[in-house]
Image (tube, rainbow over all chains, first blue to last red; front, side, top):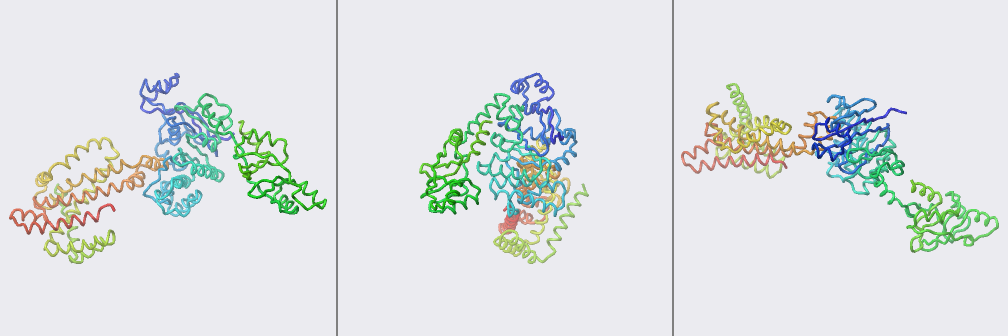
Length: 395
Length: 245
């Protein structure tokens, strides 16, 4: 097994306390609330242990006040841990002096913030150059690297704008470009998409996943949204009251909840994940119209590698399906008309669940069409779609 | 103490020499063009007409002396005040201690400064400049500190996350983000200097304050208005030249 990129051991963070006293109380099994009542100290991180492998997206998920942002800041010591070690590539960074720490931050980390934290008096280009400027990189190289980072996040052409001239999603792209420009090993992302509206959020998640394929970086991603965690994370740590209550990959989190807290979270997700025909249907690759000849039908099916094809009548209404073997034998027998070959198929409505589709499609060797209330074709479903989604639905 | 006085007197002398070197009309045209270039055409026109009026009233020499005193005082006040403001923003003890001192400096009647200045430095421009600096230094200290304290913590955190040291955070984040507030402090400093420069005529400082004081003593309304108009014109020009927009 490779060496872990980040290894956190028995990490504690206590605010407003004497640290040692509170940590020994925690070790004796007192809860966060007990300690607050007894000593007035706040336990922000309670004995965190985890490892992150190189090139992994590690998501730390928790509700507000769970200590996730504090834990993230302990990784680059923006917040000083009270006790415990943080090893990056085997080196304990809690032992670094302030100058070594600054150099470490310059070389290893890029950070993206919830409210973007862009410099309003700098242009987009100058914002992206910031990290390089701090490193003392010369102006030419700085400019080139920042421009390529901005291009990566799709902001070419906006270099001379000020951040407040951009939309929220674009501002966070600048934040990401600023972090990428220094080419860090580790990207720390503190709820980067929480302040964005849902559509932009999804777009940014997709962009991050795209980027992740291109760049070889370890990403620590903080979120309070389990859907986001499941979408992005290779592994997910769930935090509650400063404690990591479970770490695991998707299946482990969804299937093997280790405690009620996680189980409750996951339940909501599973419930919302009852898939319907509309979720899994795809666009038909090719369609036929009744007036088409047999040769056209054969050509279309061959071109698109289909075993059967749907025939549509007026107003997009489905007449039925034509199978390639029947077309071939009809041509061999000298028949001319497509009409005679059209067969009826069972249909589905967009709201049908995957389970009921399974019953319909199991015995068929053709796809089934999904029709709206006016019998117009909205999409098609093939057997493999249903089976694949049944499998994930049950995870 | 003498060296200090000599230094200030030397500084005022240099500024005065530079300002008095060109023909008055040449200086007026240059200033008007600067106002036009950096601000607005209308301000350029005002500079030209206003200063020409002062020249016409025969107050030009007094105007130069007043301007030289203001420039010197503001220069010293900012050179001390802005760094002090930066320290005040970062140091809680200094912040705490400085508050009553600044309150005191800002609320005490300005005439009172004249007495110790007079005792230490005698009659003349040097005492005037020193009293002016003390009077005008509070706003740049306060507004610099305020501006820096108001910088979003997240920006400073971002700086630190990228490995910026104290100095880089100050130069690249705090000062630019606090700039509007600092500029307001500079503007206030200039305006206060102007009012004090006039008052310090009471301890023998030259400039536009002198005819004002004299007109008071000999009850000459005309002279008082002429000199007072000069002060107003300078005040408007300086304020418009150094406001934020």
